[in-house]
Length: 111
Image (tube, rainbow, N blue to C red; front, side, top):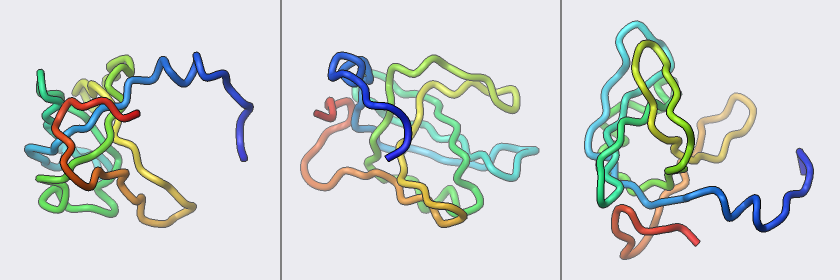
């Protein structure tokens, strides 16, 4: 295990939500980034993800993913990313997106 242990109160600060990828496109001038528009139920967010080496934009559309919804926005390549999509990452292997199976709706809290 890497990193130190945290208290439940620290973990509880992370707002994990179900998001549905509505659209995806490569970011011009970047070899890594894909710009996603993700439905979080009450709002749509633009999220930039470094997945272009492993996924085409078309593969991502329609997926139900887990989003860190309360992450501070970050500028990359002149665009603002308004969240983070979770994935399991190994060394040099394709990231496995954390997806939702079943009857979850966009915006539902992951608990």
